[in-house]
Amino acid sequence: MRLWNAIKADMLFQFKQGFYFVYVFVAVMYLVMLSFLPEKIFLIATPLIVFSDPSVLGLFFIGGIILLEKGQGVLTVLVVSPLRTSEYIIAKVLSLGFISVLAATAITFFSGYQQVNWFVMVASAMLTSAVFTFSGIMINAGCSTVNQYLLKTIPWMLLLTLPCIALVGFPGSWVFTAVPSVAALRLMLGAYWGIGWVEALLLIVYLAGVNFLLLKWAVRIFENKIVFQE
Image 1 (cartoon, one colour):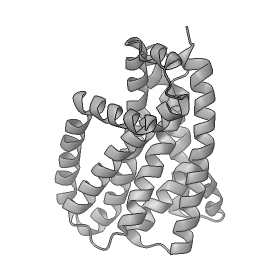
Image 2: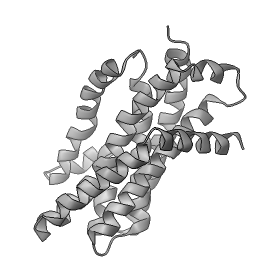
Image 3: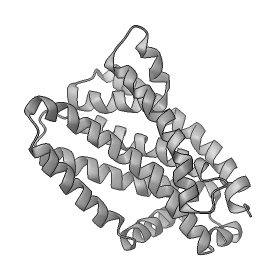
């Protein structure tokens, strides 16, 4: 019940802050851009756009949310409230993941992309958003302004995204699947280009395990370096 109430509160906060309206605008811009692309490029660009969307949302929005709530004294109240830190973080991850799934679904559906594995696409969007949201929470440690946070995200974003180049293909490139962002992109591409159920299941289980570990790490950092950071 506490978790569900926290999720509803986060979704209401995000709605009031205009997150949903921003993503309607962003989705429309993506759809306009995709409509002008030749078919061969369209087939490649669509899954890449859908993958990058939850990545940016999870990494950049969570920093601003936490800094805003800290300035409003929400984190101080969290210390004495019955809501656990893990529940607070999970609510953030799920509420932002919900926006990611909505955006990914809308872009894919209205773009007219054919033969999409919707289950794999939704799973990839949610798991990708979670990886980057957890990362954003940990990056937030030690930041007191949005500018500080944005500067800290640059090396992390490069660290998470550059290994994705391995999917272009070269000897031994499969090793990079151990990088969560690469595994997430491989799963997303599979949703559009085709993927075996065994491979999809293994990638989903792997990413779920990574997110579980990131949750544990994020809770520790959040309690030690964000809530009591002064």
